Length: 255
Image 1 (cartoon, helix red, strand yellow):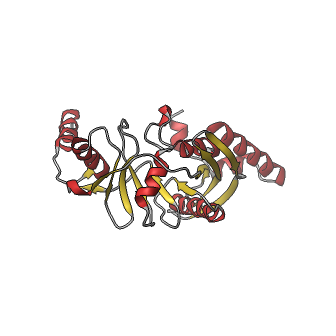
Image 2: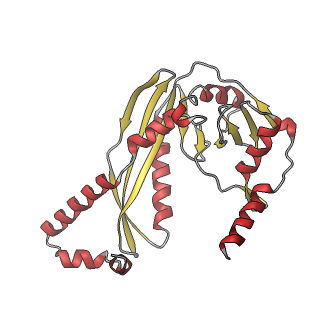
Image 3: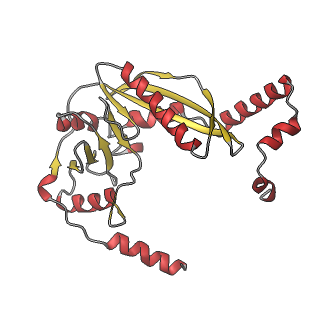
């Protein structure tokens, strides 16, 4: 496709009209007084031998109220060797399982996680693969909801435990929320109290803070990689063998 054809395709998506059930757009207000826990995990691929890959993962949590972060814990980095073509997916599954283990240990408050979980926690996804006629579903719901509920907080039930939620009246975004409890209105009202930070308007600031807490950035990953190389050489593996094991000729050609 040419650029003009791609632009026309995007235009057709943006202008496509959908009809949703007006009565299923439920308004709600921010309220309640519960503290919240927010859990997130981070992972990065350190080395890729194609038959197997080496990953680093870390999970942590923060506890917050409306005044700010009360407490936090950042877990230690775990190193994992995973074999197979679907190693990335396996790594993601292990990170999510580690997040859920942390969630099970936290009691007495609303627990937020980044993703689509429904086991006694509130899953709030930054991205969603749901679609309607090829159009991102949350995009279509947001456009329709803002027409009939301008300047309001609202939620729209998509499935049995899945919702599209606008947490702040002035936010440009809605998020997929997965929650299995019956008190969804009360829960969303409590979470909305944490969505007023101007830096993350419409998104719970504790989830943004725990994301920063656990992120394994390039500098940290480079340190781990250099330490691993040093230990490998010290154990008797030659630098030539180590480099050849993880060699990618594409990187060589691209400089």
